[in-house]
Length: 265
Image (cartoon, rainbow, N blue to C red):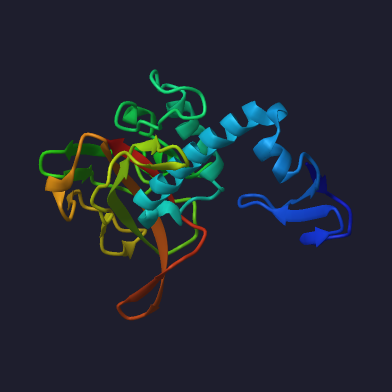
């Protein structure tokens, strides 16, 4: 990998070069074509270990995909491409599978869900630096509910908004991710299960100079009785900024705000 620094600026393909940008960086990255052919990787005995690694990478990538779906309402608040770190996190969970062999190890979120708690979607302004007061949470699997207790928030006391915007609101979401199991070809849900819709709550918009009155947000899954042991509940929260465009209408400002996974269960 190389970084383009001279006056020639482009993205896309040029002969054997590929140029692209990454979220969170204004630099142009260069890569060259190379490596073994697809047939070699798929058939050659020399790439047996590569195939095992690729299989497990597919499992961790599949797990990261479903976590992204579970936190969809807040993922737009990220200030970097967090997919790579999320895949690495799933890969770490995958390596904790004590039963299955290399190349077929499961991603057992239900056994190691605590590893996901606290995952930050921001590097420049993480949520903990914006809201400097713990958000108390509860998760009740029996009822499929989660609560987020937001305290009184005061600008420059326990609320520090680094963005120049007149309004803000808080978001909470509750989603579900299932363990990812190798089925002989690829990674799927641990069993044929019901799909859960991620539940979302938005506080009303309010001016940044106004204090935020403490509130408790309660979220419940659409069919909580369908929860099984291999399901993990993911509770995320974030803050986003807004700009009034007319009386009663406030538009979200892109590339502002922050979020994180605040609890799992």
